[in-house]
Length: 337
Image (tube, rainbow, N blue to C red):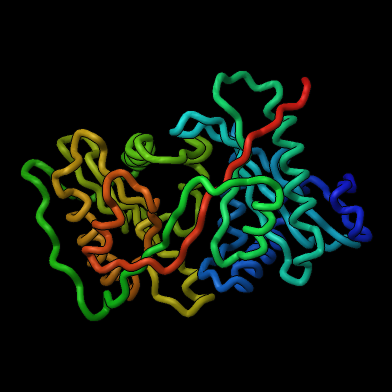
């Protein structure tokens, strides 16, 4: 345990490492409370986070990469870190976290961010790479305090992202668009899940960002409580994955928020099959599948500068922007080894 110098004005504030599953309930409570305070329509569960934390990878190890802020033994905030070699040539040490709304504007977020940067620099020092190193974070536009903190600590906006929604699946659905000759959608087998996941990763290497590509990351995904491949729509060219829409219904989130919403979590087309209308065909099929499950609103996230023109495609199918967020970066100053 340690008291960070940035937290010196907060009596009793202590920063400590993650202590195991016993911390998860409070981590989830604080994250959900922050989203609720900001009017952001996300919610997570202990089961979701348990699946994520259970599979340690080189990029994310909760014992190393989670910091808890507490006062008098009560958690008031937390931060989580991971690193990734990005598609735009950087090694990015990313951070995220939340502060209990009752403890906002008191320096908890500042203490967590500075501790995160210190630990990132320590982790980076012995790692061999010829890539420039940066700190990274992500902030919903509704979180005004998070934006102010990032700006004050020297971060600059690097990219913008939108959440989009398409309401009315219970009233009006688009016509299912035909797929190109030789491409088919067929029922999935469990043995195909990993190949589909790998195809998703490959397709997004042409896009900004990047993520943990390890087998452990796949296990986190597969063990999540709402993992449901019966919702997926995958286009096959023989035995090759050509494109897919990976869809999810977050049931607890819907119950908590009183929604009937389904997410097109990842819509991708691999490079050899682009510009042939596959995405339109898969999205229209996805909307019908979600409607059959009682879903009224379809949602997805998109990079505002997506090079494939995805934003225009989604708008043509009735999606409209509902939320905005941004990715932030600043140079990582290395510490001596």
